[in-house]
Length: 159
Image 1 (cartoon, one colour):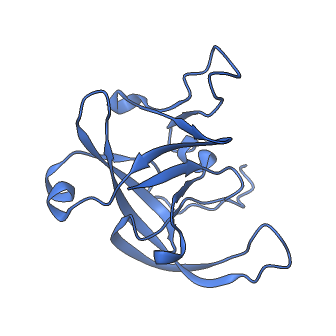
Image 2: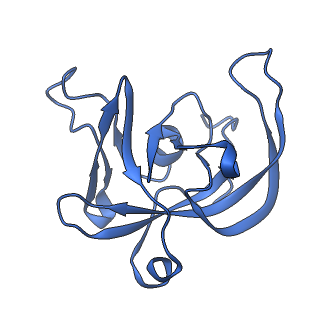
């Protein structure tokens, strides 16, 4: 089990070994840190990955699919979700904690699927718990795409 954390500083979603890689796109990228003193990481694979989410209100397990996500293997202990990448795929990200706004659901809504994932807080970080899906779960359970399969370019002029 690990946290899928909202991270608006990361410009692309990233997963580690908790995710099950479904497909390698053949693309790689170079990733740099938040400080210029940090070395960049070269040849980070772009993948299609799956995570299992256990809905606490229904007990149902849902397979969450992240297309165009970066794979860091054992180097990334948590999942990093870029809210803009989710929103560009028509996922509604209400990331304001409820103690700061009585109008916020503090959740991720996949309206097309009628799914709402409540967010928790660890300090100021919004997150929800996910785990590695089994092969059987990937083959038999419904999949919900959190990001588009179209190539994600966080530096596109459309933004």
